[in-house]
Structures are given as structure tokens and as C-alpha cells.
Length: 172
Image (cartoon, rainbow, N blue to C red):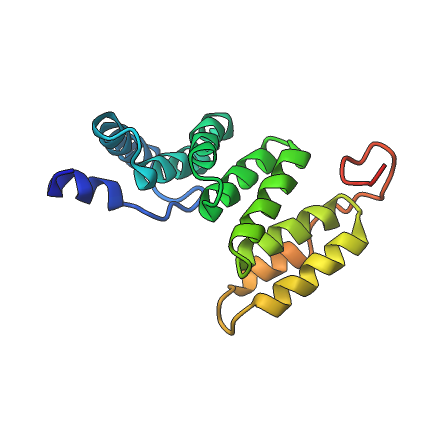
């Protein structure tokens, strides 16, 4: 891969939802598509393209990109985490939980994955599991690692659903 193409791939590594203009996101996506056309196995280009789609709320487009990465490397914690996030946004609770768990299994100190896993259980009323995952989050958390807004969003998620038979996280 040439230097210019490598520079394209690392451009905009972290894409925050709703950050930047949609034209910038479209331009970024084009760079990553070009990089993948040259090297279809380029992990970071695929991650970045998926993040652009996630930021644009094209969760259904991001999922297959991330699933391909997980299929290629089941130990890719970042791909599992982002796949879980996209499944969660699509309302696909069980796949989201499975991929958050895979992210924490492959990277034990993955604070964001533990926190999102705890928050999902909290939102769905499986409070014992939520408490266990919040506890683990606190155990692996390093000082200053998590922004206050992350913790507030996760520790006080809304709405809180009571556990019931329709809840996909309730053990059968």
C-alpha cells in the first residue's frame, strides 16, 4: 500500500456519531472504499468505513463490514465491540450481547464493552447481570479512562424495562 493510500486510511480514525457534515462523512467513506478496492483485507479501512456508516446511522450497512472482520479474525475485540454496538442500535439484543461478550473475552480490560454490556442488561431489566457487569467495569477501569458522560449514560439508562417473559435477556 502506498504512502498516500495509507494516509487516507488513517484519516478520521475515530468517528463520533453526529460529528462533522454529511458531505465530509461521504468523502471519508469514499477514501475507505478506495483503500478496500486496493486491499480488500485492510482491517483499518473496513473498521473506519463501518464507523462512518455507524455515525450516519446506517447500522445495517456497518454490520456486514464488521461481521466480515470478525469472521476473518474472531479475536478482533474492536470489531466485536463495533458489531455489538450496531446490532444494539438495530434492536438486535442477543447478537449485541454475544459480541460485547466476545469483545470482553478477547480483551479483558475493554471498559467500553463491559459498560455497554452492563447498560444493555440494565435497560432490559436483568439487574443481577447488569450489577455484575457494572462491577467488572469498575474493576477494570483505570483512572481517567472513561468520560463522565459515558458513565452517566450507562449508569442511568432510560427507559428501564421490567424483566418479563418477552425480554430476550431473561434466562429461560
